[in-house]
Amino acid sequence: MKASFLNAKGVGRKLSSLSRDYDDIRVSVAWATEGPHARALLAHSEKITRMIVGIEFYLTAPSLLRNIQPIKGARVNIAIKGVFHPKIYYFERRNKAAAIVGSANFTSGGTANNVEAALLIEGDKSESAFRGIRRSIEAALQSGDKIDAEFLASYELQYAATKGARERLAKPLFRHPVRNGKLAPLLTMDWEEYAQVVWAAQHHDPKGGLKVLRTARELFVSAPTYSHLPAIERKAIAGTLPRSTTKLAAGLPYSAWQAFGSMWGFGDLKHLVADDGELRISEALDAIPMTGEVALDHYNRFIAQFAEAFGDSSRKAGVASASRFLAMKRPDSFLCVDSKNRIRLSKALGFAHSTLDFDGYWTKIIDPVRAAPWYRASKPTGQTGRLWDCRMAMLDVIFYDPE
Image (cartoon, rainbow, N blue to C red; front, side):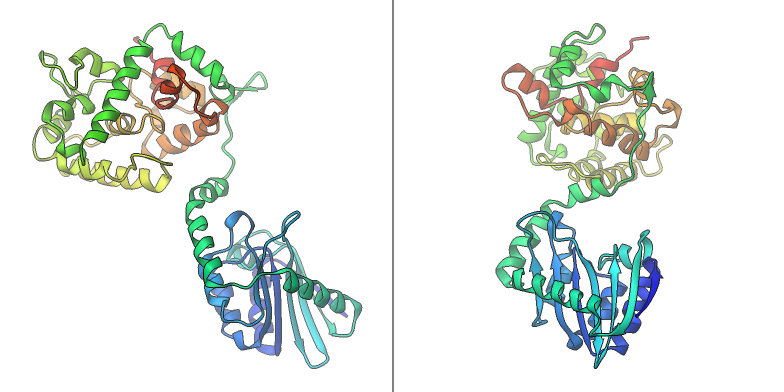
C-alpha cells in the first residue's frame, strides 16, 4: 500500500484526478458545499454509488443536496448521538482502490483554503484498510435518510434561518482589552449588574432616555416608513429639532429629544430631513428590519444608502448621524455614538476613538457588545423588561460624559 500526505489544495487536486481515473466513487463527509471541487466530482455523477453527507449545525448547502439528490446512493445522515463527522473519499477500479481520509470536508475550504491534513492511500482493494473504509461507508448509508422533497423544504427553511449564526461563528476571535487580567466590566456584567449601572447613572436621566427611545420606536411602528411621519416627528428622530421649537413631538419637548445627541449643527442633514430628501434616508432605514435579528448585511445596506443620501453635500454622513437613526429605530441593536460618549466607550472597548468609522462601529462596538452576558440575557418582566428592549442604546446612559 502506498500512502502520501495531502493538504487542502492537494485534496482538491486529487479529487479531480481520481474521479476521472476510477470507476466507482463513494463519499462520506460531515459537510458539503458548492464549489469547484463539487463541480469536478459531480461531473462524474454516474460513477458515484454512495454519497452520504451530514447536516449538523446547518453547514451543508441545500443547493449541494439538491444536486446530489438524483444519485441513487445519496443520503443525509442525521446522527442520533454525537455528530456525523467522517471525511472519506473512496475510489475503486477493478482490483485497485484509493482513498483520501483526513480532516477535509467536501467544501471549498476543505479542498482549497483551509489548513487540512489528509492521507491518500492507494493499493489493492482487498487490503484491510480499504475493507474498513467500505464498511464505514455502508454503515453510514444504512443509517442515512433519502433526500426527498419534504426533507429539502424543511432543511432549506432552517438553513436560511440560521444564516446569521453561521456568519457570526465564522468571524475571527475579537480580542477584547484586558486590564489586570480581567475583561472590561462592560463585557462581563450580567443583566442585574447592567440594569443597576443604568439606573444609577448620574449624568443622564435613564427614565427620560428610555421614554425617548420607546417613543421613537412607537413612531416607526405607527407609519409605513420614516418619510410618512410628520416633519416635526422626523426631525425629532433625527435630532434636528430647532432649539426654539415650542411644539411637542409625539408628546415630548425639544429637550427630551436631545437626550441622545443633537444633530442641529449638521445643516445638510437638517435640509434632508426637512424636505423631500428625507425619502432617501427613509429608504436607508427600510434596510433595518423592525423585528428579529439585525445582521451585518442589513447594517451595510443601511450605511450604503444613508451615505448616498447626502450626494454632493459639503458635509458627509458620519457615525454620529447614522447611529442616531439606527438607535431610534432599533434601540435593542444599536446605540448613538457621539462626542459625549465616544471617548469613554472607546476606552471600555479598547480602541482609539479617533479611528471610529462605519466599519469600526459594527466590528469594534456592536459585534463585541453582543457577546456580553447582559446583552444575551433573556427578557425580564416589568420595568427592566422595557429597559431590555432598549439595552444597546441605553449604553449612552452609562458612558455619557457632559465634559
